[in-house]
Image (cartoon, rainbow, N blue to C red; front, top):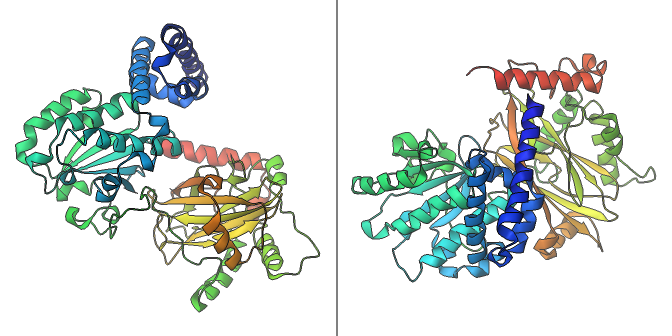
Length: 486
């Protein structure tokens, strides 16, 4: 059945591409940005998002593509950047990305009180919406977003139905399948009639995504750590610009290893306990590709540390999936799997492999820096070599689906050294367009299900299993968990 579904989807995507080219592009190619036309032919996910929103009806999908592509050219969406937006709009903090909802979706904040209806500035405000959505879509292809419509302290002069309709159209036509939900907070009763109109704009298929909340209900969707105080939350975040605030990644605990006596103790405990833990295996070919290449003659502290890591991680099974970036191959590709608090199997592993001919500097950042120890979090990787990064929750804190990790990497074409001071200077000077970024989500494995990701007590038994056995066990447990009724 799954195979038939995949074949049908492929046929629909192919038909959509063929017909759009023949029926729309050929006659008036100047209507669209050629970059969008080219992307449509290459990006299956993009085509599928339009098909999904139009229930796989190709005729309706083509009309939607036509409207969306004309808008993208009119707004020069592919060329939008910070300089396209008036600085005062970026400084005021009325529209920005920050935090995550309980399902792990990014929050897109619209603070309505900062919006004053004004025909002279409405185009710039629409461009700001488009700028943020396009920036997010390029970075997080296909991952939903939750809109936080904050109506607290809002008066009638802030309500601009043309602007609201534009935001609705962004998710109905221009960025289909991106809307997880729209949380309306503290709506004044006087605006009830206005939002009845909004419901009609959304249409019956999307009206269920509107969530009207007050302080009591908003925490059903967003935890207090990502809610501001006026919503009953504890988030200390204060908007400021520059820089842009769409990422909440910060330096985790224990930068580059132990930084205090307490950390030294925990580091020793980590080494002792890590030998008892295992992670999922990858195929034999990928294991061979991820083997470390070290120089036996090296006697530097860095080399000794690498040997220690190699030694203590021999029983770690490598993560199963691999993201193949231009500078680093990163495993796992999308999600970090942690054991539950009850099981005590909490550590996980990130493997970086340098696929360039130069040294690659890397940094690890997280949205919850107080929660995690990351060793190492700021270092470098030699050509062809691999680095194992151990990530562990700190002090019994709970892993959350909202937590994210960011791997930043840049090629050191003319390295002057790889010590802490040299790396700090390197990151200050490296151009932004030379930095590779990759994001990882967090996932907690339920303790009451079979788990092949982190097993302490059964490590010896695991050694007798092949990688195929382990993968099948993992897949079965995932299926049981995902398919079981709530």
